[in-house]
Length: 254
Image (cartoon, rainbow, N blue to C red; front, side):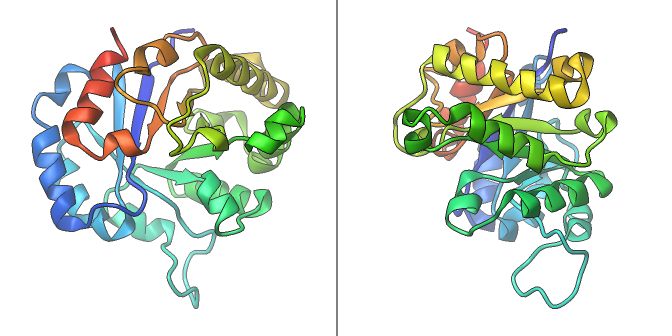
């Protein structure tokens, strides 16, 4: 089954509203030419979602949040609910990113609650998984990924997986300049797809898009996304400049 690539920009804690507008005004012209082959998603920080949403409302580029709460409303200082994201025109939400796991202590059960809350609000989760260098070198890669996939996607239906993107991001390759080799990335993606097949069946697993994340750049996007089980990229640093992000997308088809 042929899966359409999905390339998402995760700006992390970069770009306030003014910079967001500046980026999108430079990036959007001509982007329609690639979206027949690739879905493009931009995930600004929460304070910039409204500014981005205003520009993307009639665009082929989709808007994503970087996180959401597992709660609907209430005394949760600093949190953002799915209904708030809906109001801003958000279509996707990144959940389970390694920085949320390692820095902010989010565990699989919390991530699963957020994934289910997002789906209930018609948001498409970009569900992140990945191992540390210690886990990989200790021979625990498969155990780590199996636990993250099983627990993070608990109670989801096959139908839910139609609206869920999985992002495999080896923690040791995020923001380090070190990228998993295409062979390493493909091996991990194929294993993740086998886990999805065990949970949801081979037909569902065959249609789920699995992105790669971890120091993806214009110079390596073609080789990575040319692998049979790599269906796009979740891009950090290389997505912060319009020319770099556009080149990464264009080169994915080289």
